[in-house]
Length: 313
Image 1 (cartoon, rainbow, N blue to C red):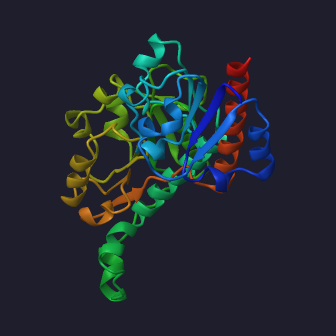
Image 2 (cartoon, rainbow, N blue to C red):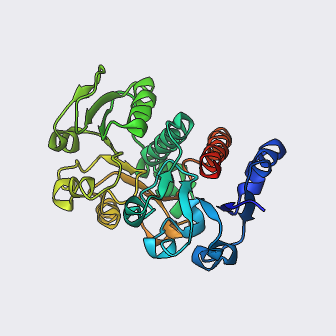
């Protein structure tokens, strides 16, 4: 019997990998466990075996994007934790860093950056045409009056402000540029491109559409307090596809009070009904396109194979 176990906690893993990929994992010098029903990982019995080395592979949705060290620090022989996402912020790495447990995630996933950017621009276009407001009003059909009442905004020639020109921010700028928008940005460092760099207050004050795209951490969460968000124009649109960067309830309230033209953000699927006005609380599935999910699981399988081979040596 192998002294290495590969544990994949992922409800959709079997439906996302090919037979050939599954066979390649089964051919490793390791016992393969695929757990596709929700459970508490720390309670999974086979993980308690003190005689095996373990590779722990987790879809963040399986743990609701929260995996504290208390959930894994007592797993004997744990060598690697692998995320099926390029985001590892949901994993408490403090214990792992100090106990020779490697943490790995997807890298350079351009398909995901494109998918998220397209979703962000889709939200922008929906807000510009008052789609959330029209949806809440059951799409009024009194043409003589409601066309005037629910006039949308043109996007071409508007100024878009990107806050954080990382991978997602850069993907959004390309799409906005192609729509004829004037692209400006603030980032912690200036980028070698043709877009106009501005200070963060200028971006907030002067942009018609604002996309906060910074990676959330203790530093970036302090960059956009409500006192800063007050600088945004009353007829502007804000689209936040990165969680925890802004006070969503505050921006939604401003929109309901018509102090913003529209606000869109990723939320729980049931959240739409909790808001009023031109607020688009959309399900968090910006990444879920066929192309990106295929590429994500291709890379996920390869990372599992590589790390398992290293542990089994």
